[in-house]
Image 1 (cartoon, one colour):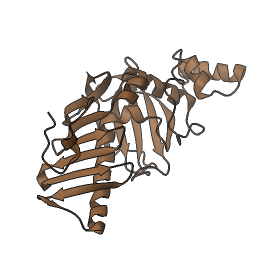
Image 2 (cartoon, helix red, strand yellow):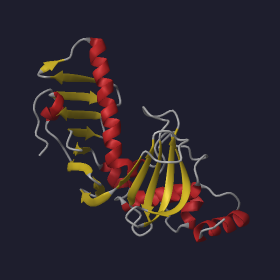
Image 3 (cartoon, one colour):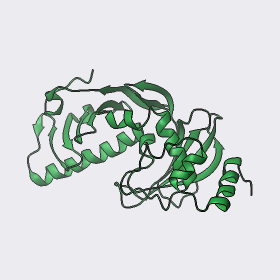
Image 4 (cartoon, rainbow, N blue to C red):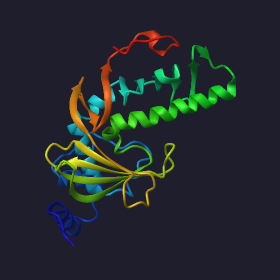
Length: 265
């Protein structure tokens, strides 16, 4: 079995100092980032690897840092050219425009409430509205994860494992983190392997598994074209597809969350 230098150091410290925690593992890496990037309530710290947690903290710092992420309020983007989203991180309000369906969704993903308009007609029947609100939330969960996943490595329900060293399909040396989920989201059976560049600590690739027990991923997608948006870094390219028109706002007009046309520009 090959023992990597960082893991070898961890073993020495384990024998000398006892079990590693998230805090002293960060100290091993010389980052001291654990205190500035606390895990979300419900994150599986006990079941996660200390080395994986420390790398997740480095990713957060490379993406702009936890204070910048926490202070980011409004994000908008176009998902693969299919639909546009506007997300208020503070309140949970989300607007989704789907041109192909002539649909506008105005929902609150924290409260599971909202309004929906299809082909110019508002949905008012309670059962139908509830169905469309849930559909909108599923869209937001999926589309936002494709945009901001690196900020969510220590989210509620996540178990992080260190899967070793590997190279991306483009040849970039990386540390590989594995994410599994418990009692969270709409697809807790999924698994992801996230490739963190050894050079700049940014996520450069992920592998998606529809079932955690699978050994072969369903898809492997690069994370390229990072740019800074008001203090945080976001990647737009996913290979042949990508996030378009990414924007970060400090404020948005009231009509953004009303059932009427809205310009994301």
